[in-house]
Length: 151
Image 1 (cartoon, rainbow, N blue to C red):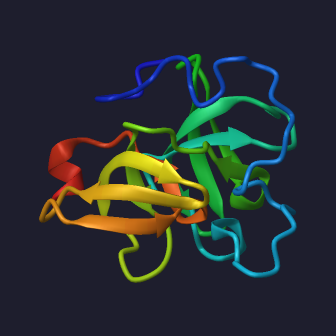
Image 2: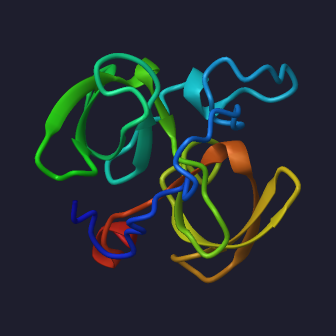
């Protein structure tokens, strides 16, 4: 699967069988902060993991958002499928990932995750190179092109 510039073929889970809850896992119990998954969070060009249904545990790239569904190109590259966004979770970002902000004041803005401090991501924004502290629940691995990020 050719995910585009910056695609890490190992994905967010190099071990392969991670069943632990991540902050972006639907149902993750944290009443103090809404999960990005509880709002309109899905965006094109983000890396996602299928959480239920026929393609459970598959990693893919969101090609299009179709209302409450997403068109997802699975990692093998041969399969494109429609998945309800409720059955997806954003692959957790890791240091040096290109990320997009899923919610809040900077929703839709991109940058590089230059550090992680507990639940906070330290993001160097693409638009103006400012450093912002963003809740990790609001970040997704972004696999779009630089041109798309700066529009």
